[in-house]
Amino acid sequence: MDWLERIARLRQWSRSGTRAPHKPLLLLYALGRFQEDADGDLRYTVVERDLQRLLAEYGLPHRTTPAYPFHHLVSDGVWEVRTDRGPGSPGSGVRDLRETGATGRLAPDFRAALRRDPQLLGRIAQLLLELHFPPSLHGELCEAVGLGLEPAQAGRLVTARRQRDPRMRELVLTAYEYRCAFCGYDGRIGAVPVGLEAAHVRWWAFGGPDDVENGLCLCSLHHKLFDKGVLGVGDGHRILVSQRFVGHSAAAREHVMVLAGRPLVGPQPGTRPVAAAHRDWHARQVFHGEPRPATTA
Image (tube, rainbow, N blue to C red; front, side, top):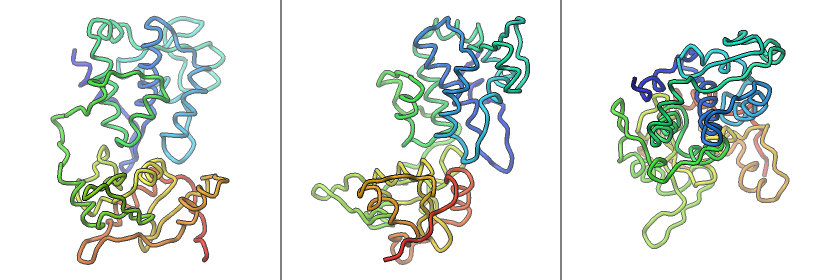
């Protein structure tokens, strides 16, 4: 059985291209717990608390329930659920999962495969990250679920389905004249830019192309905030700042809040700006809540 192929084909809820990170997050969480205790059961009431936090941070902007993946992941053949009554899930109702003492864990043959091949867990974890989340979030997501990957396992997993264009970074940075499109930062050591990255607006994992119309040159801070839904790009290519973002320091105000309503820095004349379709995708799938009103001078 090819476990990588099975993980790549998880059955997920989908509507108009909406991303559904529920099952991938539960699997990453379960892999982290497997590293701690390969034979331990995961009680739903504990998973509910932990997975709700992960869904709030790495899921869709709107509220969702951990009960959905806890029940439905069974149908993918990688997860099993038991209750006080015996094997089998009582359904996706939160009350049923709580009151029946439901517990879950990786399916027996899956656990056996992970024991036989110590490298398999890392390959599966990296595949889940590659397929469902942008690279800027991979490291912190592993920490959030308690996954410890070896350096060789944490390297990029090359899939045959789709290859990234290695020219993407240079094309985007050149288009924005090596300046952060949000704050204008343009640091270098000699001729080498430092702290500048090419951000995908529509995530590569969700069909975002490797081209300038889907890219922004961003400093490391604003790239992370963009991928976490704190920042976005609205009509007129003006910067959006989520009302859900809270920061009381002068640094938070100066580096984030004052950006609300500002126009992007770049791209240079003759270069097409971010396409509306990609901006709209990010606004629907990543950006959290409503934007703050534009700041006034």
